[in-house]
Length: 82
Image (cartoon, rainbow, N blue to C red; front, side, top):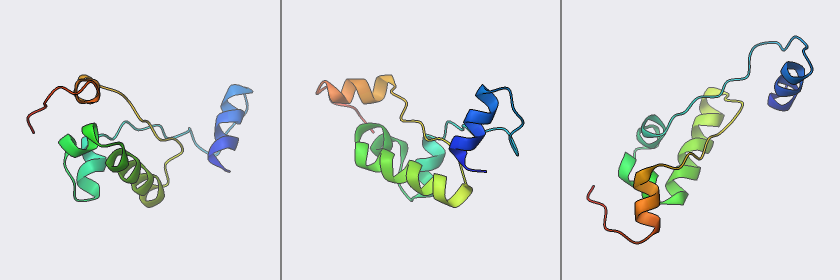
């Protein structure tokens, strides 16, 4: 069953092969690609690479690009100490 199929089955009240996997990875994802949370939170390229690699390596059904105060602060140009 595909990730989309899992979600649709749940939404339609059906029976998926297993529940959709929706982890919030953040620091784990950063470290999984050999980076760190500061880079993950301040550089969208690190966030994307880390989440995509985790999805491929662990067979995840959804990726989360969650915002947090660190990312928002950096986005507005404030210096963030790593």
